[in-house]
Image 1 (cartoon, one colour):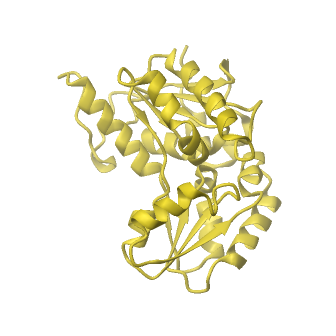
Image 2 (tube, rainbow, N blue to C red):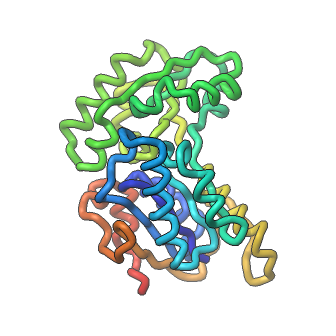
Amino acid sequence: MKIALVDSGIGLLAAAAAVRRMRPDADLVLSCDPEGMPWGPRTAQDVSDRALRCALAAAERRPDALIVACNTASVHALTAVRAALEPALPVVGTVPAIKPAAAGGGAVAIWATPATTGSAYQRALIAEFGGGAEVTEVPCPGLAAAVQAGDTAAVAAAIAAAAALTPVGVRAVVLGCTHYELVTDRIAAAVPGAALFCSADAVATQALRRIAAVTDSPDTPAFRAPSDAVSTGHGGLEVLLNGRAAALPAVATDYAEGAALAVTPATA
């Protein structure tokens, strides 16, 4: 089994790590766009074009599913990527976990990039899945870039600024950018008592389900929850930076998810 993931940078590490936990034997292809990152400030068409190029490069490695592991790209590029690759290759997007966070009601905050905060896309998700929760949108300028750079001081400053905008006593915080999932411990410390809702596990689960649904082969095991995962070996790792084979970026190992992947055997 092989699963590809697309993002502008290292935000895809959380979903990649989730796949690795659930299926240790799966090969992973990480396709990024360091020449064009960050995608947030770019036009919708530019994001779509860049994400599609990353997806097509990954598709050449013949994966069984492709994850668009970026909220911005899922908003602007998912339709184009699916049009280019499905039905032959299942494509899974990333959506903020607003529905499960809002299920308990009360005060909920959504931390997202400034471009996503207040967007029609996010407002539509809140209207559809917010239920009776009191939802506050919190912009986090600079946080994704600081995570990407591995700048701990800038990460701390951006988290502190976002926490100051978050209502006191908030019950849940939805992380609406995949980069934020790499610093959940620091976010949790800044918003004590709030449960954090991430997308990585749900996205990984959906990718495995899509593979099981389309393969329909006795050689492909049905989806298993992480606690039931059965490994037939240790899956390999291939990294594509703007379509070219490369090593895992050094900054990735600053985070637990990247450090775990760094010990993965490289694939040809």
